[in-house]
Image (cartoon, rainbow, N blue to C red; front, side, top):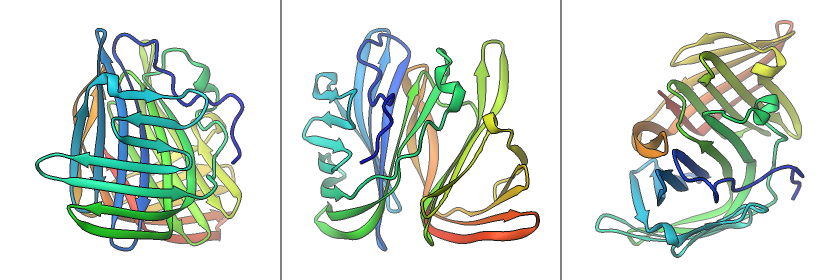
Length: 295
């Protein structure tokens, strides 16, 4: 597995106030689209650990004592209670009065993009730092939801992470990797930087192993940002994203380290990607297992 030498997988062991760090492990089969989100939040020295679950069927949140949480800064490895999340797969044992969830999933080699934050990675007081640990990998194993088994064989997975004080005030996030020979991720957000605010963008389209990157730091312009259509322009390249959201479920998101904000995510969305150069289409694909959040 290819890794960035400067990548740090867990940055929060010394944080004491207004801090969160979370990881998003998504898995998609024909019948089940589901993500597990382990996280730690810190407010005035008090820590709380969570595993959130969101799928095309439901969402739920499981809270754990902070001493049940541990994470490695040199590799992707998070443990919360009897749940383990890593670059090689996940093992899940979650139970509450509403849901009993068990999972044993293994991953193939991860497709890891290089530093997606660009120069903003080195700004010390970014409100939220975004990472992508895998644009696309294969998933094998099974998940049991309240006794019903869902099997994964050469299905698709995705992993990302966020850390900082709060999620952005306004943002749109889109992810889909069941494109023909492709994978896609996009984030557009309002970014505070000192007394100023600006609109930040990072979008990655992989066609095979070739990466097309559209970002604030490489002079990409946002031509359109509507609920059903986003258009980006970088030089002679034009990227169109057409969006159809499905049923949405609620997640908790951080505000100054406290998981008190409510956001809605559709795990049942469909996106169409059209990449053109000088008016000529060079890639077109549809992802039917996409995820979308817009706040």
